[in-house]
Every structure is written in structure tokens, then in C-alpha cells.
Length: 512
Image (tube, rainbow, N blue to C red; front, top):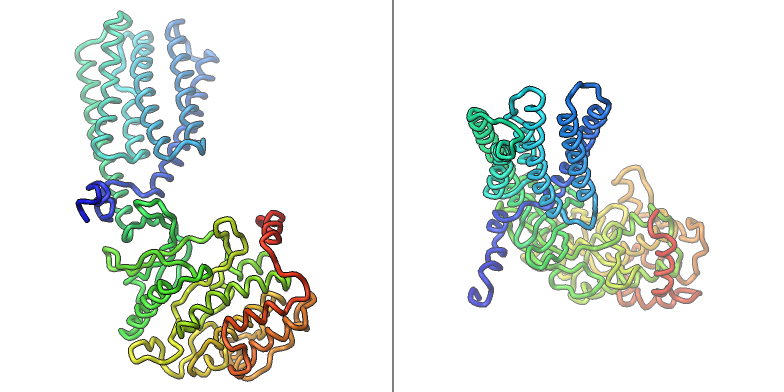
């Protein structure tokens, strides 16, 4: 294998090696912002100097006046150009950093010629200590680059001070004493040492962040969410540049007794194993699973472009029946595969049903979070919950879940019926002030008819299908997800929701 893959690609596969070579994208983007701010401040400062010089408030001879004006005009131009480059989206973050380093050297050259020349015209002595020194140190803090490159650019910028003096002296513009050369060399050397040390510190911190934000072959880019024991990050594969969502379970987040911690790890591991074994396009796809260098469990899954059904209804309100059926049938496709493998999800709810763009398709639904999945037939070594303990989300739990009894595909269909009720009416079948009361209602009370709660007209056959899903007796519900999908397909009075309908809707309501 090692002979088939180039060494540079093998190095990239090792997270620690990659962390040594790359700075985190977030740090590079933040540096771009800092460069933009610094360039704006520089442009404003030079503009103020230009106005002050042009006003003639300070007495100076004609040559000194022209030198200062030229210096200020060039300073405004350099800083404004850097600001424009840093503000262009077409220019990459690394392109902006290269432009910043180039601007640093050009500005240092201008200062190293203009300041000593103007100073000599004013006082008869060439000024050896200039603004190059603070600029050199400032850029070392703003622009993170590898230490050798930082040392090189620092030396080039510091060298402009003695070279500028030599240029002016050989041109017959100023008289430079040896002490002024030595002073420029000494201050430049000190500035290089400070800038090099600062740059090394910034770069080392960036590498540490990069190492901390790399798990397996994935670079963590942006935190998308956070839970009790872990986090979900937007990430990209280091070699394929493929976007992904990485879910982490952090060791330091695991609290409670040893049994509780082991249960959390078992649930996370089972979620990865179950998801990896499902192939329905309506089940979120798993890319990778493993343990990071610091002991964090993780798995990488496809990054979805869209929103959950929970957020959709909060944002846009209840859904028309045709569209709700379209979504429910897609959920049935995912659950049908799981049920065929004798697995029940046990946590179907709007927050675990994700509406996304999938290729050219919109209104494409994905089922998420198989962490509570359990075999329909009990198996000796796969019990992740304690008998008699309710597991799930109270607003969507079937009576058998409330009592801690054996679950089945009908358990998922009860939860999907609750989701359908909520999609069409904008309210859940049961509402209560406490979780305990909510569980009691699911276990003992019959829900109100959907047509009484919905503000829109509900086809009678669709209402019957949904209310059948909400039956207390599992045997009275549809047999499985495939049977429910078949009944949903016959429940509408109008033509089914189509891809054209979805495209038209999203063009009318891209966001809100």
C-alpha cells in the first residue's frame, strides 16, 4: 500500500503530520479580517497625514514638502490596495496573506527612503529609526506564516532601512554617518528578533489549534451544535476536500457513574454501526468512524444542506397535506429498511428528520440519529437500556415506550404519526406542562381528531391513516413502514406532491 500512495499523500493521512504543515482555516480567515482592519487603519492614518501635510500647517522647504506628500500618497495607495484585495471574495485567504506580506515590504521600502530623506532636509541628519520597526512587529502578529518564511520577510523589511540610507547616500541626496548605518542595523536586528519570536509563537499556537481541530482524516471547521456529551462540527476531508459533519463524544464530557458513561459510549458506537449498515438514500450516510488522538470517539457523516422539519414548521408554519405525505413516505423508506433488519429507531421526531437538497432534488428527507436504535428481538449483548425505563422524546413516545416494554416497528410508526399530526396542525397530539404529564397522556388518553386541531382541510383518508398510527394498541397501527407508505399513497384527494412543486415552492420561499 505504501508503494502505491505517494509519500506526500501518506503524510497527509497522518493527522499530526498534517497539523504540522497546515494552519486551521478559521485562523487564516481571522487573519484576513485583521489584515483588512489594519489596512483600513493605515489608509485612514496616511489620509490624515496627507491632509495635514497639504494644509501647510507645518513649515517646511519645498523638497521636504514634496517628499512628505509623495510618502503619504504612496502610503494611502498601498494601504487602500491591500484593503481592496482583502475585501475581494475572489481572492483566497492565503492570497490575502501573501498580498499583506508584499505590502509590508513595499511600505517598508517607501518609509526607509522617504523618512530619512525628509528628516535630512529638515534637520541635516538622516533619521535611522523609522516606522518600519513597529510595522515589522505588527505584521508578525497579524499574518501567521511558517517561522522560516517569517524570518525571511522580516530580514527583507529590516534590510530596507540600511539599504535605503545607502541608496540616498550614493545618490547624493543625504549625508549618512557610519553611526546611522550601525543604528539602523541594530534596531533592524532587534526588530527581526522580536518579530521572529512573535511569529513563531503565533504559528505554534496555530499548529496546536490545527492539531486539536483534526480528527482522523478530517479538519474541523465550524461547530454546528453541542449536546450534553459531545459536539457536531462542519468538517472537510484533508485529501478529498469533501465536506462532512463530524459528531464527537468528548471524554471530558462523560459524567456520572461508570455504567452511565459506558452506556453513552455504547449508544454512540451503536449509532455509527447501525447507520453504516443502512443504505437507504433517505438515511444519513456515514463516511468514517474512529477514535481521535486525544481519545474522543467520532464519526463523519454527509453534510446536509437544509433544515430539520422542526425548524421548517417553526419558520414556515404547517404543511399542506400533499407535501406532508411526500415527506412521510421518504421517512418510511428509511425506516422500512431498518425494520426489515429487525431494528427500531425509537426516537423519530421533527428534529431527527432533515429536509435537504440532494443533488438536484429539493424536499429530500433524511432520517438522522440512530443512537437509540434497538433490535426488535432482544439480544443478550445489545441491551443499551434498562427494562422498565422510558427511552425517547416525551412528545413522540408510544405507550409501550412509556411503560418500558418491548418496542417494534409500530413504535416508530406511532412517533411518525405524531410528526404527521404536528406537520399538518402545527401542534402535537398532546401538550402538557411537564414531561411526566405528557407521558401519561401518551400512555392513557386518546388524541383529539386531527381535523379539529388543523386550520386547513385534511383529507378524511389521510386523517384516518394518521389517527391509526396513534392507536394505543401497536397491533391496530399499520404493520410496518412499507405498509404505512402504501396507505399514505392512497390517502390524498389531489395529485401527489412532485419535484416541480418542490422547486417552485423553494424559488418562492428561499428563506424567511
